[in-house]
Image (cartoon, rainbow, N blue to C red; front, side, top):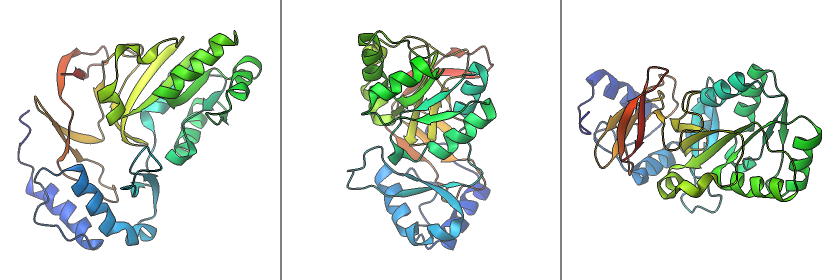
Length: 271
C-alpha cells in the first residue's frame, strides 16, 4: 500500500469531531501525515479533558525521565488481547509481571491472567531473588517483562541454577526494536513471544502461536489501519471508542512482507 493513500471523509470527520470536543485546535491537518512531536502536542491540548473521558491512562514514553512525557488515554474497553491470547494458549500455573509499574500494565495484565485462569505475581525488576524463588517454589511459569530485563533475569536464573519459565512475553518500545540485534534473546530458555509497543500497552507488532520463537516475524496490530511503505509506516486509530484517535502517525519503521502465517495473516519483518 502506498504510504500516502487518502482516507475516507467519514473517518476524518469523526476524528475532527473528537478533537473539537476536547479543544484540540489543529483540525485542518487531520488526515495529513503527522509526526510523533505533533501527536504529543495534540495530547497536550487534550490533557485537561482526560478526567471526563472515562478512560485508562498510560504514559506516552517508556522512560519516566522523558521530558516530553504526557498521558495517553485508552478506552475503558481496552484489553491487552495479544497477551491474553498467549496466556490462554500456554495455560501457565502462574504469571510474573516484571514490567515497570510506571508502564501502567498491571490492570490489563491482571484481566488477561483472569481469562487464562492464572494468578499474577508482581516482581520488581531489581528483586531477582524473589522472582527466582517464585519460579522455583511457587509454580510461576510465565514472565511478562521488557526485552532488556528478560536477558538479565535469564542470566540470573542460569547463574543460580534455577529453572526458567515456560513462557516469556517480551515488550520492546519501537526505539528498542529498531536497535535490536539477534543477540537480544541470548540466554533465554522457553517459549518467547515478542511484542513492539508504541506506548506501554499500545501494541504495534505482535506474534501469534505460529510466530512464537520466530525471530523478527510479526503481525501488524489490528488496532490500526496500516500504510506500509519502503521507508516508513503510517498508522491510524481504528477503535471507534478511542478517546484521542489519531490519523496517519508517521513511524520511522520500514517493514516488508515475509509471507503468510499459518493463522492466515501476513507476516512482516524489518526491511
